[in-house]
Image 1 (tube, rainbow, N blue to C red):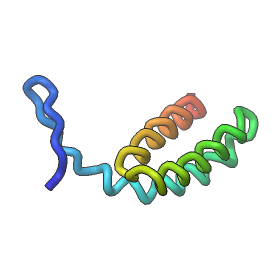
Image 2 (image 1 turned 90 degrees about the horizontal axis):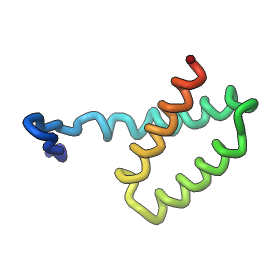
Image 3 (image 1 turned 45 degrees about the vertical axis):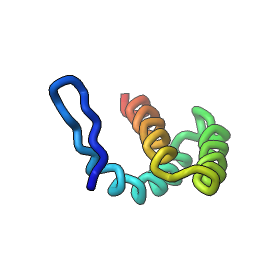
Length: 79
């Protein structure tokens, strides 16, 4: 059912990725407004590139990478 990744002794079952697709699009829209000081252009271009890549490529490869990007920006804002 779920893809598995083997890391040494531990095998990780990837269950959470399909759940994270839907909230992530909202987090991009919410994250674009508070980050006007850092660079609003980056967020606009990433959303445009995401839409283009989602039409061309599979969503499963593109969405987790943008999720990691959003986690980095939110943690830097929190710190």
